[in-house]
Length: 380
Image 1 (tube, rainbow, N blue to C red):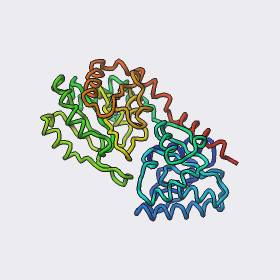
Image 2 (image 1 turned 135 degrees about the vertical axis):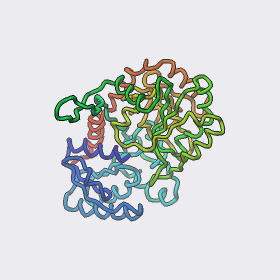
Image 3 (image 1 turned 60 degrees about the horizontal axis):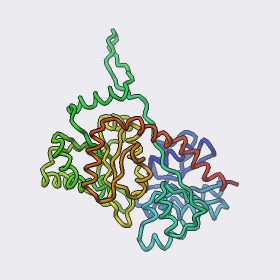
Image 4 (image 1 turned 45 degrees about the vertical axis):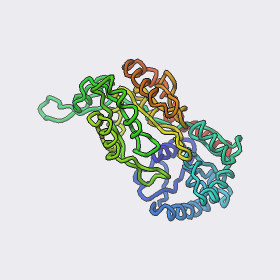
């Protein structure tokens, strides 16, 4: 969500003047030509109050045409500031920010969401959630999150010259895959990949318990690489710790088929991992009140030529193109999930080209054009 809001500001700055009220530290990483007004982030309730106050102070002088909330959590502040400054109010919603059932949130935030001039949903299921809390359909638009399309991988190699310096060499996908596999002693074994926070909704522990043993029975040397850590400062997220996942694996005798890589924020490093894997698994659980708004990692995987096998729940149905960027399985059918994963493993790269073609429509510049289009009718 943080990365999406960064790109939203960056892309909108190509269409309009943009000013942001955000947490302390935002200015250091702000997009070019975007002004940041910082307020302390913790505790959250103070951040929301300070952000609303600062935004109101800025809006009195700057007189914006549109006040845009980056999520439903800041929608109340955005609505108040917009009404106080004569601007129009809009919000980009992610799914969970529409499903929160806390009584205070329902009493204050939901009315603000219903009063927004424009509600931009990240997927079709999220748009349905917006209608479910009373947002008028004609005020809702859909813009899928964007993705960084990868460039050729860059690795530092020793240049044989008198200076003994390092140079950069561009590597194609196959070479980058081979280097990562060699460096991590993966050989030619089947590699499954999970990327994302280790939350209850992501369902990794259930995958390890119910699916991985079925795959290992066919391919005993299968390895599941796990990128991500327990959620922190996340709305309504509950964790599945690495320890609990290892314990579950030990109970079904697949503990040796796991490898945790921790949280990785370097997109180039993550790209090498995507290219080194054979299948991205996304076993998101269908939990009432805790929806998966989109499934950005499935598009990231596709951008690197890696197909996804996922449960067809929430906005994941918009993030995976059946038979093109992977396969969708009925939610909770773990046997079918194993079969789809084994099928995808047997194809070994056959979906690479169609995966990348699917991901191209999610490039950030296109995301920016779509967001700008949604807001165009609201400007003065």
